[in-house]
Image (tube, rainbow, N blue to C red):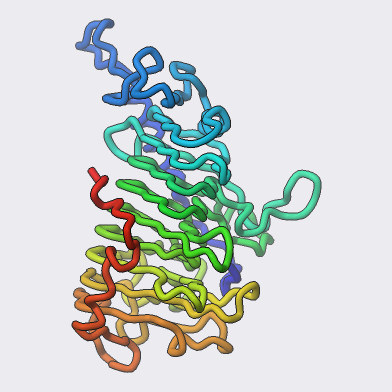
Length: 377
């Protein structure tokens, strides 16, 4: 996605990834008081290569105690539909792609916390590719999911490319995960990056892919939750990062939907919260993305029953990405939000749903006959 900011950001989330690696190592190390025979099981309650959950379960372990040491190798081995990957604690520095043929795939993090299992790489849109050219936004994704019926639980998806490390690179979009499949569900997952962290998309303009994110955490600065999917975020935490390279607001934007005009529903945020590392009022809640590939898009975002912290600019929470497509012409709305970032100061700047309209802004209405919340645990 285009960005108005190409200055360098001397911020690092590598400390989190280092902590994640340490937590993963700790989870694989026996306490001194334990007998050698009491060594923790690296795959927790999810069985082991010698006692598989199902014949279609594959085990990934960074030190070789599973079937594979990389997630991508396990994905390739899971040819066809219905495979489950159990991923042991550790940091997996690689790019991973789940193509359209690998439907109904499930990834289970075997740690006690999503911090224990980290899939991370550091490509950006402007990163040169072998053989010439650059990756572009989509090509920067650490993880790409195109298959329908994908589910992930207890995993961190990250892109730790940093502007400050790459002066002169203008393509600063660095996607942690791009999801294009229908019926894609993420439970208790984390999404870490700066610009364009979580790309909730579809395979084509006419395909209205449904995606569900429950009890998840996402952080970033510019448009870090974006795309044209029909996406529901429930009980999620969105955190905006501070920026020392900018002297004035806005630092960035939380949401940037690009909903197709024919799609009646875009992004729904419900029973969630937005917090910030940045000074008060330095972030916009959203701006509409009308991509050059779809000039008829009408971005749609509803935020309801959520807490918006002081980092959100309550006076003017929405802004334009392009003056040709003002946010007022798009489908932005709120309902019963709380917190200092949700105060209605200028009513025209914060469209509010009526109670009747809110009756149609629900996970059931957005996701239809697909009920992934019943599988959340």
